[in-house]
Every structure is written in structure tokens, then in C-alpha cells.
Length: 324
Image (cartoon, rainbow, N blue to C red):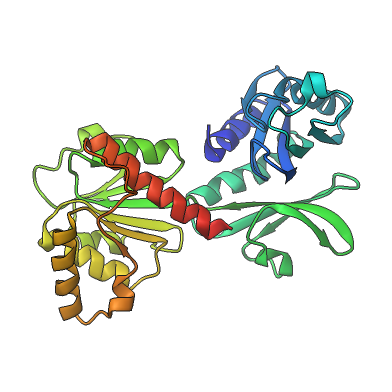
């Protein structure tokens, strides 16, 4: 369950006039099972979505969330193996986490709608919660505040108050050039991992039925299709066609932007020939070092699904390096 799905469900519940409690991991120490910013939501009918620990403390947090909904307050809970309640709700991994539980009602619907809108657009929303009294302030991209410089969800002192800053930004994107046999498992894996996916392929035999509701399909030449997408530092571009007529225009366009990742399917020999062609187009060796070729982590992948796994793993690695 990814963050986008969790907050879409929150919006759905609020539209039904159900009160909800949003539980967020605000601090971690050691080998905690979930990172800062992870969310779980409980509604007044005892439904639950998301996770803050992978199962260790969810039952206890669930009961406390219902208390928050009933009492119209907020709570901060800390869990670790040294807790007096360790045998009941401690973390078996040996780490420690602190969670914030906040009540949201129908009156907060517009905030949740703004959060959901940002997932599919550019920009940023920061939800700042005062940890002394639970008061919330929403900062948007247009806000003239230094707080908008924050890049990661974290506890921070702002205006002499200890605040938790929960950051919401657009989804990471994967743009696949070539509707080939590897594309289908790659799209499936990308969706599981909460990437917004695109497939670009100008060919008439482009079978779009198997990608319905899974990816945005662009029946264009790669350089034209890429112009229709906001390529940014959260975008990964992967060429899979083995055809220079399709791959090279995509690479030329991509190298002139600043994506998170560029990868190309093919052997070492194919990649060497590709580099020679791009050097002749005026790119430097330094610029061409941005291209991962052959694409994917070296896991001796053979089947389309295994190759897709190696590609998505390399993209996730690059994404997580970018977030450090």
C-alpha cells in the first residue's frame, strides 16, 4: 500500500463524513521497520489502511487512534525494546520509533484533497504539526516561507517551536521507450512501487490493451512523447527497443534535461556502439556517463520479469541515493 493510495482512501472516508486518525512515523532510531513519514490511517468505523511498523505495534496504535478520534485530541507515542510494554508492543527488530496520531474530520477535507492533487502534479505541500499542541499549518509551493526549503519529512524547530514537517511531492516517474516484452512486468513493478508510469512507442503494432489503467500511453516518436511529460529530477527514462531510430532520439532529449536516471537495454557491445553515435552528436564522455548501460543491476537476469526486476531495482537504488 503506497502513500497515494492511503491518502486517496482518507479522502474517500472524509467524503463519507467519517472521522479519521492519521498516524505518522515522526522519528526513528536504529533498525526501525518503517521510515520517517510512513503513514497509517484509521477511521471511526474501525477500518485501517497503511502501516507504521510492519505489524509490531499496529494493534496498540489502532486502539490509541480510536481514542484520538473519540477525544478530539492528538497523541505522540514512542516504541522500542526497552518499553515497559515491550513484550506486548515492542519492536522485535531492536529499533525505536515515535509516532504522531492526529484527528482529521470533514472540515479538513480540503487539506487532504490538496495532498492528493500534488501527487499527480508538480510542486510541494508541507503539513507542519506543532508537537506541543497539535496545531497544523499547511504550506504550499506559493508560500513565502523558509520552511519550503525542507526536502525530507522530519522533526524541526520552526519559529522556536518543535514541529513535524510532513512533505508531500509529486510521484516519481518512469518513462519507458518501447512497448516490448519487458515493458509489461516493468510497468507492474513500477506501479507496486508507486511510480507514475508512461510508455512511448510510435509503432502501429503497439498493443495498449495490456497496459490499460496501468500506464499513460503515448503513441509518439520518443522525442515528441517526452516533450509531453514534465521531465524532472524525479523522472527515470528507460529505452528498451534496441532500435537506434527510437532509442537515440529519446537519449538525446533526456541528456539535455536533468532526469534522475537514464538506462538503456542492450549488451556491452550495443552500448559501446550507442556511445559512439552519441559522441558524434556532440555529447561529452562525462555527459554520457549518466547513461546506465547495459541497464539494470547485475543479477544474471534472463527472463523478461527478471530483467524488469533488475531495472526497477537499479532505479530504486538511484532514487534512495537521491533522498539521502
